[in-house]
Length: 332
Image (tube, one colour):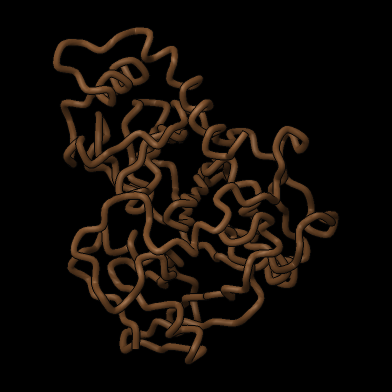
């Protein structure tokens, strides 16, 4: 059986309980799914046009977030290649690495480091890895995967109010929490070897049930070599390809090819962007540890006491343009 047929059959199985309930008069298929799966979400409060949000296939929590993360000391990890990508976070002296090989299957990890509640997120379709504080106005939220996408980007939800949140921006776009924005936490997207070198006493996220999934496999084989993403592009700039990687800091972006070519960029306001070899693309080959080398990017800011890590991303150009359409991407 072909891969496409398997996907179609899987979607039919997932959506069969929903279709059996029937659509109401004048109700679209996606409106029916929202009504059935999300009775506690207030869709009358929205910051975006609901037509911009599309069902990605999996049902609510069909991609299961990790709520009780398990960690192993980095010195004991033997099955992760040194070039594999990880998201790394350090808070008050405690450092943890979250491998893409695990995030590929879960997309969200609800964690707490030194008493600080955080959410680690990864959207494979946008190559967007972001860490958020999950505390807002003294309230700690837990996040899950809705199964819906906007601009191909992961739409999350909090379990306390079932409001929907845009992963790329960290902003609630639908429901009770609409207009609230999560605080992003500086994190590095680096090779496992780099993390191990920086934090030999650090910890690494491991699967709770390692045999349940083929961790280390890229579920989107060849995705970052496609000419365009799945969603419709609008007025995309001609000087860069949609699936090209860009280094992003807020509403500013630099083509990865430029950063790679020059090795180091220093901006007028003190940002220092560097590149070095040694990190696999997670979205290239079938096995992540065999993906082509896209390198390690680090963005820091000059301060009176030295360089300090800042929030940054290494995202696909189409995703940055979708959320910041008026911001140019620096290519040379």
